[in-house]
Amino acid sequence: MSQHSAAPAPTPTTDSAVATVATVATVARRRDWWRDAVIYQVYPRSFADSNGDGMGDLEGIRSRLPYLRDLGVDAVWLSPFYASPQADAGYDVADYRAVDPMFGTLLDADALIRDAHALGLRIIVDLVPNHSSDQHEWFKRALAEGPGSPLRERYHFRPGKGENGELPPNDWESIFGGPAWTRVTEPDGTPGEWYLHLFAPEQPDFNWEHPAVGDEFRSILRFWLDMGVDGFRIDVAHGMVKAEGLPDLGSHDELRLLGNDVTPFFDQDGVHDIYRQWRLILDEYSGERIFVAEAWTPTVERTANYVRPDELHQAFNFQYLATHWDAAELREVVDRTLDSMRPVGAPATWVLSNHDVTRHATRFANPAGLGTQIREAGDRELGLRRARAATLLMLALPGSAYVYQGEELGLPDVVDLPDEVRQDPAYFRGAGQDGFRDGCRVPIPWTREGSSYGFGDGGSWLPQPEGWGELSVEAQTGVPGSTLEMYRSALAVRREQADLGAGDAVEWLTAPEGVLAFRRGDFVCVANTTGAPVTVPAYGRVLITSGEVEETGGEALVAADTTVWWTTA
Image (cartoon, rainbow, N blue to C red; front, side, top):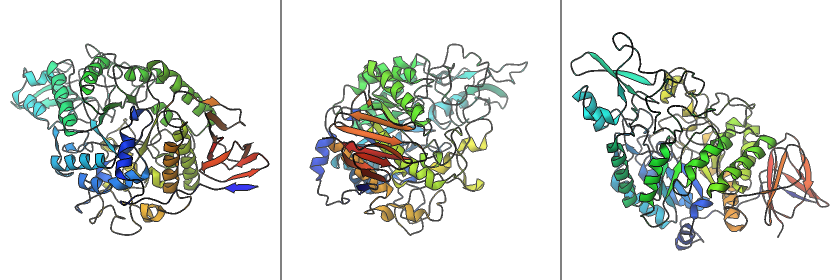
């Protein structure tokens, strides 16, 4: 009889790591790297603060790059750090070619990219093409010049309905709640035209029918590619093109990003013409640069349209993110995903958390059916156990995986932030998103103690909860079975096992109800999604497990909510 608990990790590496920089860099330059890449999302304001102002910055990220190298990821995706009034945490961009002073300078961005490359890490930056800030020069001039200004044609300005134009041009509503239209006051002081904003009023939507918009973004792409970035994550990739005539929606059941049908403002077929033009630019550059789409589509099949061979490389699999911790549901979405991506030759992508949804350690701590933004802490122990198991399941699937900062520490959402500190714009508007995204954006802990647990010397822009230090990198490093060491071990095993990573299929194995079991060559993954131990065959040598496994006489007793990796070689 043998027992296995969460497998201990190899001794963590440091700056004088056994794996040299040159070795890691060689791995990072492998062909088609993005097909099985593990990409780590950094939310800049919450990752590391270098100057003690309470806000994360580029120099802070740069100082922590060795940690990410040692974690074992292939690339780092940076949420926006562009010049911005920060009405929506930087997703309202005023200047796409400048770094906001709160994050640093263009020289800091250059140094970050260079250091990442020296460590064998690639850098992916956010691109926000659906809308700009209302402080963008184009929009400010459009307001100042009044009706008839050519600059207004680069956005969606329309006269209002009603006797005096007092009603919005159509019935569209903002994703953040309230009308998707705001009426401007003209230069002469009179109420005037309305402009479209699918998100906050400070985020006017571009009119992608106007050629100047396309010209500008092709130039922006080249600017950052020339800086050396390895790709772009495209924000609201499904929203840039609007149906001709901006017709009424008629029903507001589709307001959530993940609706059930194509709407006049989301997932219009015209977006694909834009991406074909962009792909031509990207392919001019060496080094296998990539595009990643944030495309909230009604089905996985429609998501596949974004990753056809002449368009984008990857698209986030939000259907998978929204799936409950349930074996039957997970198997169904895995099969649909692989079946949809196979015909277009694109890798599947898997993701469990990001900056817009409740962390999966908290989602899985609550009953199913509550959505992706949850206000309750739930059963913390249950949530962490399921989150660890879900992570090993995700990393065993064919394709690429995304990790959101702090999930490798098992961080929960901070669900009890005082109302007065919240900054999510959706929180202050009704009938839109739930507005509780701040909970997943609380700065992460690096040390057991300190004013902000190692985040910086001057506190943090969102308050960190008591006990945060016990979840820190310092507290978990070198501790067998800790969530951090489980991630480090899993990513090391994933890199070493030839049958893991890229691919487009799994071989499902017979398993008890509530259990997923599949083979990939000499590799076997078993995930027990039930609340009780289950007995399965002992498939070989245990590589790693998220929980307890007891082997006796060719069988394995897998603990509740536990995932196990075996090799049969």
